[in-house]
Image (cartoon, rainbow over all chains, first blue to last red; front, side, top):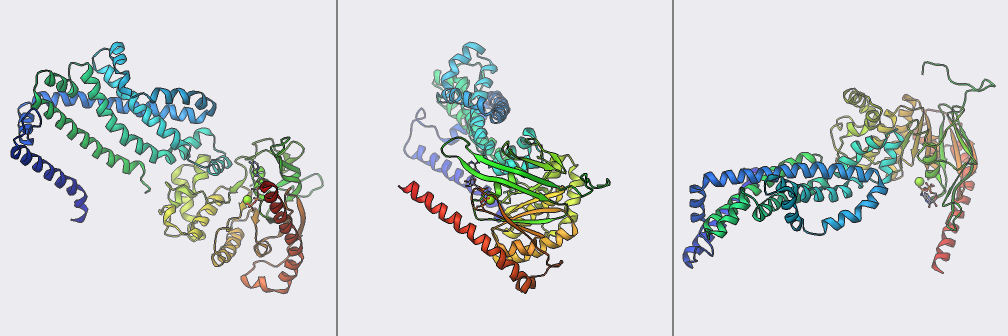
Amino acid sequence: MIRKIPALAPLAGLAVFLLGWEIAVHLFAIPEFVLPAPSAMAATIWTEAGSLSLALAVTLAEALGGFALGIAAGLVIAMILVSAPPLEKAMLPLLVAINSVPVVAYTPLALIWLGIGSASKVTMVTLAVGFVVLLNMLHGLKKPEQGAIDLMRSFGAGRATIMWKLRLPAAMPSLVVALRVGIVRAMIVAIVTEMLGAYMGIGWIIFQATQQIGFREVWAAIAVSSLASMALYGALVWIDRRLVWWK
Amino acid sequence: MGTSPATSDDGQELPVIELVNVWKRFGAGSPSEVVAVSGVDLKIRPGEFITLIGPSGCGKSTLFNMIGGLEPCDDDGSILMRGRVQQDGELLGKVAFMPQKDLLFPWRTVVDNAILALEVEGVPVRQARERARAMLPDFGLAGFGDHYPHQLSGGMRQRVALMRTFLFERELILLDEPFGALDALTRAMMQRWLLDVWAEHRRTVLFITHDIDEAIFLGDRVVVMSARPGTIKCSETIDLPRPRDASIVTSPEFMAIKRRLLGAVEEESLKSFEAARADARRVGA
Ligand SMILES: Nc1ncnc2c1ncn2[C@@H]1O[C@H](COP(=O)(O)OP(=O)(O)OP(=O)(O)O)[C@@H](O)[C@H]1O
Ligand SMILES: [Mg+2]
């Protein structure tokens, strides 16, 4: 019984929020183009289910694909840089400079170079997630104190063994932070990139609907994508417990 | 193992480790040069339990790091293992080294921490775990094999670190103040326990301590280091009978040895204390 409460509490919170919203819309007669009632949104989601789920599938595929590629790229580059401190010193200012501009600012370039298909979205997400993973892992992989590294060396361990048995596990908590920030960023960047140029996906639906003053569709698309984000975040919390299994 | 022990030309068994005029200068040539170890000569014979005592900051850990191969010694001296001069880094993987901190990995269980060195050596994990599990009772860890370090007391953590060191089967074991952080009672228990384990898993041990009773109680030989720059001031063979039990520390023989060593140790502690005060005054001015 008690164990179920953590899952129930947020759901109850959500239900109260939606109910309050519904009542407020009717009570104050808020016009639909300002804020539609949840019931109206649900109805739209129902009637548009086909196109919305197709769009969601496209966006999710782009976000998750970029997420996976970003994790891989960030991990590999972080491991290389940590193994070669002079290289890290040379590269870090450049990386920080690139990262200090919001990734979205590079979107027009991505669209010009890669077209308005999925490639530009996946690339942008990879970039966004890759930086989060890279910067967190650079920190995490350097957490082990010199004494622990020396202990491994005294057993005859080389760099690769120290990386695998000491640095990587020590960096898992940092990776977890990176994944949580990264998954949210992945969805945001995928949708924003779609809004700036695409022919499918949630962002494209939002853009199209806004052009045609279809505010219900806009809200329906937003609701669907935030539900998907929540589900992804939930899945991630589950994965996180396996990454830092010892706590 | 299996082969006959290496012997020198005169037929004597070769020392496990021999230090010849070993120096360590940090920041050599700069105005802030620190001479941590100066001109140390030391022979450690097979099976010996040597305790090394000296004031804080006298270069004991530095000496250990050099014997463990973690840091090279300066060019004017050399370290020999079984009569062979060891080049920089050659000693890595040849000496079982237990640092001052337990340095257990929080993500590994007791058993998995204990087999760390075996894993590095490439022993299959299942086989290594079996060996570790068999040793748990010896180390007072029966039933704790699957616990994580944060679930253990300080004394238990120290025993896990010792077990990790013993499982890395090398002739020479280096222990850097393994009981320094424990309370007096736990410490006395651990000392007796260490002697039991040592009697069973016979190895050559070099043991660092601040504590003169501990040094005499454990050692076949007590080596006293001087204040910085650390050098060997004197050494005393302890021929108290083994096995030793707790009551021995109040015996007249023990007291006599202690009285002799105490003079040397206290003189050095005082020197290092005054040096620290002088440093503080210089920095303050
Ligand atoms: N990497 C280093 N660079 C410069 N100085 C160092 C370095 N390592 C140690 N020292 C200095 O060498 C001296 C000896 O240090 P060491 O750690 O060997 O002392 P210790 O005898 O082990 O002390 P304690 O009993 O407190 O552990 C100290 O003065 C220390 O400041
Ligand atoms: Mg020390």
